[in-house]
Image (cartoon, rainbow, N blue to C red; front, top):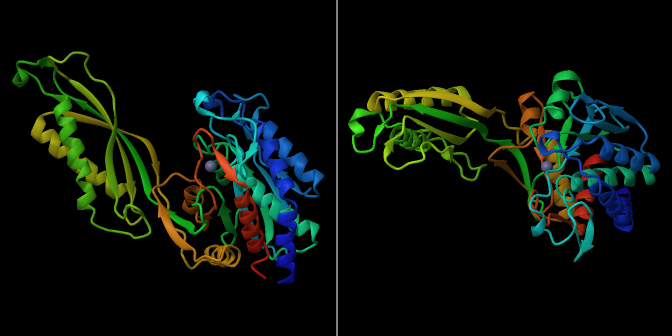
Length: 408
Ligand SMILES: [Zn+2]
């Protein structure tokens, strides 16, 4: 108890150090080559130097080769602080950021952390530097106070989260055996302003491209052709009706059902008076974990066959993205210990939730590891005028430190 009071005091007194690190990291834009950037190497090096200068010196590098960037690699860095046991507590944050977007919408320079109204504005200040900085501050507090953590702490800083994680967590899972089944893994990269939600599950994700093939004709003689656009509309309604047909509900999620939404639509013909022979539409499907993607693929095939029979078209289907992952159990250690830390520091009752999909935790869960996503933040990520609340830096650092010492 005495230790924890000291940890809290250290974090509050040293908040300038957290702000200094935010400022250092914000001024090094770490963009993926897909976003016309040069990767994360410079930012990773600056972070490593900061850690070294502050007494964290046990590093391992897991660089993923990528010839598109100057350094030739996408860096993944692990900093270790030995604990009382060899059981690992991983806190995984990502080094990369998304582009600033429309510059004129920013009130401050995007790649400079500007402090005003108890917030730090700048691209990356929240996503995901808040996670980086808070995990570092928690570790520094333990170091400074010579407190041995309950778990062996692994601060993991990964590349390439924003454009698919191929050079980040996917590379680590494929090429290196870093994780053990009993490890605890926290990704501080998603949450809510109070810090009350602990994300333990994602819907399975399927992004589907559907090309419809018909026969072109004049607009005045539709019977001479086969209208691909009409058939793709029919298919959109039929696939959307799977939202009712897959009748399972799960209260972890909002909405609590599987969703099948037609989204993007490619242009077909430039003129009004032609029956189109081709039509391309896309679906964003978010599926409750109780259904596998293969279950869904079969259902969609039936939808296509029925529309083909009725309208005389054929379909070509391709998947733009398919991610499937099991849930992390509510009763597992990482959920329990993090929940206790939230109660202790924030004096609120946490609840477990599922989300629509799209975090790196899905890759970990799919590989069989328990992983949770948690943060106390306003979710300004990817927006102009992204910010992090300085009080959140303090609170999140305390929660992570409490997890490190297992709430002793
Ligand atoms: Zn993020």
